[in-house]
Length: 322
View 1 (cartoon, helix red, strand yellow):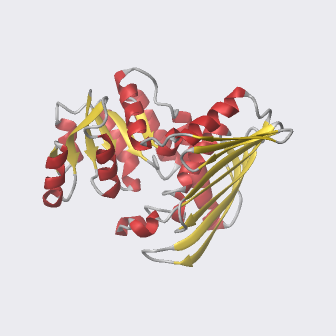
View 2: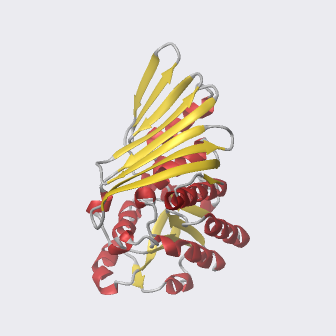
View 3: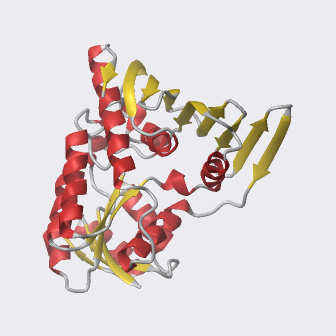
């Protein structure tokens, strides 16, 4: 059992703790870090971990073997590096950083310290996406030519916090909340991007925004693609990969549709899992040396490189070459 600290106990930090504490057989939280100590004491007591106000106190705790970061995006890189320098494994919520340079710094710090790095891309663990990767790997689709992805939800309305409305924390509107998951899928199935052209259209600003992001991709291996994200439309998730022999579509959490030449279509529905628990358990396996974290550091960097390119393209109105 890995003893861990969780840093940041806002909406999502508590969601992680709720998914893990008392449910995982591989990791438990023994320490929590929050700037709202009094407001969080009862919650921490119910979960069975102690509280402190700083990351430094958690790192000084001899019982803490690993740290899970659920903090504002702009803090991720420096905190990953701080945790790695202390010789502790680190799991960072998405996005790993806001720039490629910072993602590379975070990865390099963990490599230098010899500690595992996990990133919170829980959609990777959805049964629909697991099956999508299996079908691609099987070769049934032939040569992969094109990928599409769309992820929209209304979380920006339901779980608004003032820091989430700051351009320095959430550039590209829905990209840090939803679009980043599509970029992770693209990095996994299509590899690094070569050229990205993006646009952003806002219909209403503020705590309950209405806006869209769309982007065209050319990947270094010649695959094409496009991405869409809408705030705050009801939940919709889709990743679709097209080959010259067929296509496979991950639709929401539990459905995968396989279409092959000759009109053969197969719809697969899978039982729902707790993907947050699954990703934390995978991180615990990496800490224990059972298996590497299933998202490679190369994929982590490629994801942030595409993210940064989208933000730059939105700002300049030009295509960005990576």
